[in-house]
Image: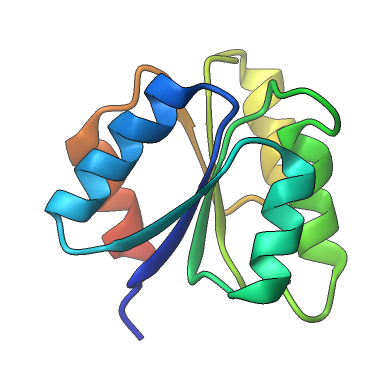
Amino acid sequence: MAIQKILVVDDSPTERYFLTDVLVKNGFSVSTAENGEEALSKIKADKPQLILMDVVMPGQNGFQITRAIAKDPDTQDVPVIICTSKNQETDRIWGLRQGARDYLVKPIDPAELLAKISALG
């Protein structure tokens, strides 16, 4: 099934706006969350088909939230793409180990992001 509904989780308003703008212009329905706790409640309320997850956020970080999503039977089928400024290979491996399907380093290249989304769809 093609992905339509995407949840963007990032504590940066600029990053949320940028990603939302790219996605909406490409026909996706987007909701946003500023932190992991808000993301988890939005996922439960209105299950997205894809989550774009920042790592460095107040409260629980993106790795912890990704792990929570991957372990919950209600949400484990929702793919997560980590979008972060953490560009170390160890971070990428750790993110994928937490259950993320893919890992993008900021600044996010819109073409690369859209290619990753269509590869999941």
